[in-house]
Each structure stands twice: as C-alpha cells, then as structure tokens.
Image 1 (cartoon, rainbow, N blue to C red):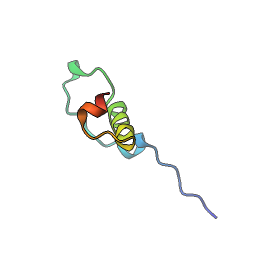
Image 2 (tube, helix red, strand yellow):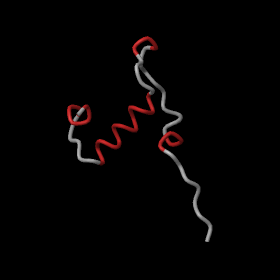
Image 3 (tube, rainbow, N blue to C red):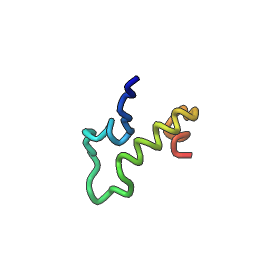
Length: 52
C-alpha cells in the first residue's frame, strides 16, 4: 500500500499573497493563518475568540 505524500499547512497556502504593508508586518502570514485555523478547530466563533 502506497502512502500519500504529506502536505503541510505551509505547503497548502504557499501561493497565498500577503496584502499587508511591509512596515506593518509583525508576524509571518503563515503563522497567522495557522493560528486562525487552529482556533477555529478549537471552537472559536469570531475574531475576538481567535485573538484570545
């Protein structure tokens, strides 16, 4: 049985463009995307829950 290759969150979103201005970036976009996905999986219902 052949296993499918593993795809990471970073691999999946590598083509995502960052619309933010360079001087306002405090965190990498992939870190924000990953944190948001994890928060939603854990039950976050909105941006204030995601922030917490």
